[in-house]
Structures are given as C-alpha cells and as structure tokens.
Image (tube, one colour):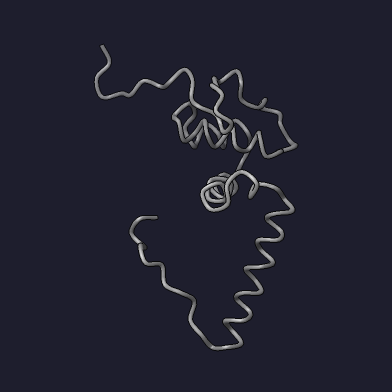
Length: 116
C-alpha cells in the first residue's frame, strides 16, 4: 500500500473539454507549437497528468516559456496563446508604460498581491 504518494490521474480534462491521456499529448519531437498543443500541455500539468519538470524535459521547454503559456491562458484565455495576440498585447503594454513614464504616474498597485 502506498502512503503519502498521490496517484497520478490517467486522464485530465483538456482545454476544449475532451479527456486527455499521456498518449493524447503532443509528441516529444514537437517543434511547431500551435494554440491547441500549448493548451494541452498546460492542462496536463494543471491536472497532474505531468509534473512541470516532466513537461519541460519532455518538450524541451524552459520553465519561463511554460509559465508564460500558463499565465497567458490565465490572463487572456486560449486566444492569448496566438503569436499575433502576444505581439499586440506586448505592444499595448509598452504603450501603456510609455504613457505612465511620460506622465510620471505610478502604475496601479495589485490589490491582492498575496493571491498570485
């Protein structure tokens, strides 16, 4: 009997409501990361199908890259994973920062800093 170890689920719910198993995840050799594949890997890690370390090793991802996918999904949903959306989002962020810099105003404080 195993004590103190959680069992890994055989399936998790994917980004589009489908059941995902390890066999359903993108191949190890994936180099073209479309929205669906990124979202499936994030769902697998969030659901416990893969650990963060396993996902990074399996797909040769940096920790920063994976976390950026996860944060993008949290902030902007699946459309945020589009490269064109990321570019637009970064451009808007830079423009907002430039306006703040020019006005001398401080960026708004996070009202719930401990919840991130």
